[in-house]
Amino acid sequence: MALRLGKLLHDRLGSEIIYTRSDDTFIPLETRTAIANKAQADLFLSIHANSSSDASARGVETYYLNFTSSPDALETAARENAVSDQSIHQLSDLVKKIALKDKIAESREFAGDVEQSLYGGLQRGNAGLKDRGVKKAPFVVLIGANMPSILAEISFVTNAKDARQLQQPEYRERVAESLYKGVAKYAGGLSGAKTPSERARGN
Image (cartoon, rainbow, N blue to C red; front, side, top):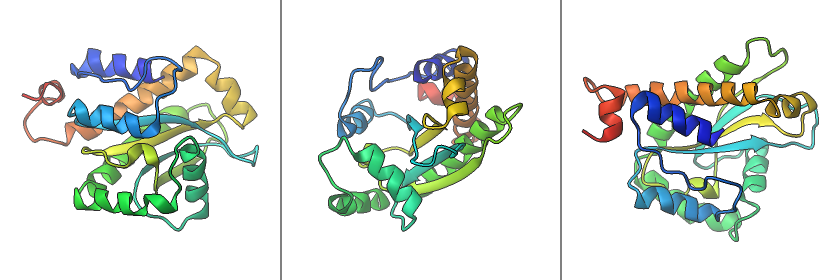
């Protein structure tokens, strides 16, 4: 889905796309953000499939980096961070750095545009899909990003219906299209008169 999204952004907006990986090769979470920083990317989007001990859990949700006291958000972050060597508690000082970079508001807005488009694009003919909203959590993969950065949970692999849909190329294309619309909407508001393709080229 990331590759599909990248193609849409490149073909429609003229954006240069930097993939942290182009296949299932594991890349350490901290390295992914470093790749984005080294490339001086304008936006960072991490795409994930969600999981839950509750097999009935369904829907989409989008995260930005910040502190949270929400047990659900912390549980999701703990699962996603499990492959990192750092614990949630060790991350607190790192998370504070993001506040100094004044990226929280931008990331929250970015997350809002993506969540709205993601749910809007997938709800049609998809009874029971939930808009789980925009949330904040201390994700390792978002820490240290020098640009607005978000993590999109596009479905639950632990839900039978979601899992079946994710196996369908048509549904994966819908996910990519929906993510594209959210990114394009946010990019469209970044600068007054410039077109998205001009902004994507950095003109």
